[in-house]
Image (cartoon, rainbow, N blue to C red; front, top):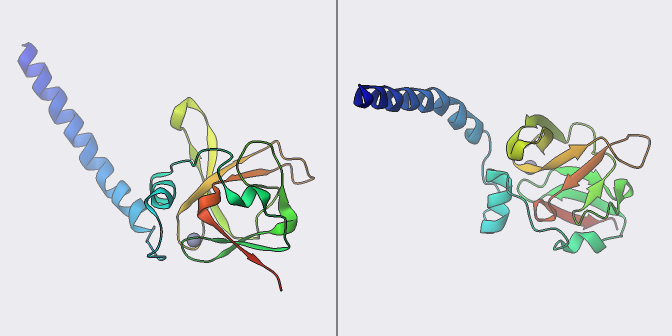
Length: 153
Ligand SMILES: [Zn+2]
């Protein structure tokens, strides 16, 4: 009896994985490595929704005028005037350029957060929260490793 139940459980679990497989495949198929020079750490964040250690990004000190681009595909994502010091240890922005990102609800780590990813290439960038300091009320908390800053000449 016990054995039968266990077998059923195994069959059930495999069925669920089979059902989820096309979804996982489709989701990952929308994300492609465009920049072949991405490091493993960058790939872990962009493709596995990892998070860089806080206070490690060189971009935290970046104060020049310019634009922040996707480190994978180069799409323009944030203007420097939207950047602010949130004290969280990750580059933070009050707003993204129109159409730069798409979002989804992320339930990982027992929290409900809004994940956002590059609208052009699909890679993960960070999470957006509703406690921003400006009139938008938004705080885009971005992994610095997903961004490339290009100063305006
Ligand atoms: Zn991109």
